[in-house]
Length: 244
Image: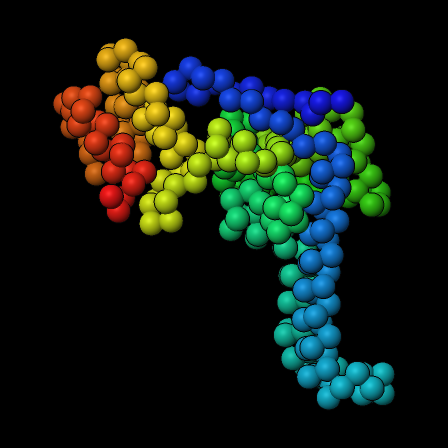
């Protein structure tokens, strides 16, 4: 059975189809991430415990732990385990090591990279999705919703999509490393530049003005309105190719 899809319309009128990740892809990504965060948390606990007690043998012989043990060992272990997903998803723009290995990533319902607020809401609802055990609520939700979303996705307005190479081309051309462009905005600029000569002059000028006004903060709306199509195109090219 083919994976369900969501169709988005870009500013140039070309539809973009994203394939929704199913229960299997979700579970695979989660299992990988769970093993990674468990190993990281256990490694911190094991090394910290050995250093605090002078070896694991002393751990079972001493009645009381050093005063700093809970601050430098127990607390960081809990932070690593419970904040693995929210921190990495924010830093990696909707992804984690497990999601990358499974070929999936998080996007908003408009295809954008989720902001930190949406990702935090999504992870906060893990408390519900994890009930009563083994993510049973979340698993049932992904099995019986049309877009395979769990409760956290519904609350945050996010989707988990298959992140194959075809989607890297159609949606997520990331902005250059030395650019402050949002990846979605960079993708729209690339798409407009590629179709530049296919569009009527008034259409490409208005689309270019809209994108320049949105992405080039050095210009006021009045200044953007005074630029002709060639100047707008040059501005867009400079935004996606800052070193050229």
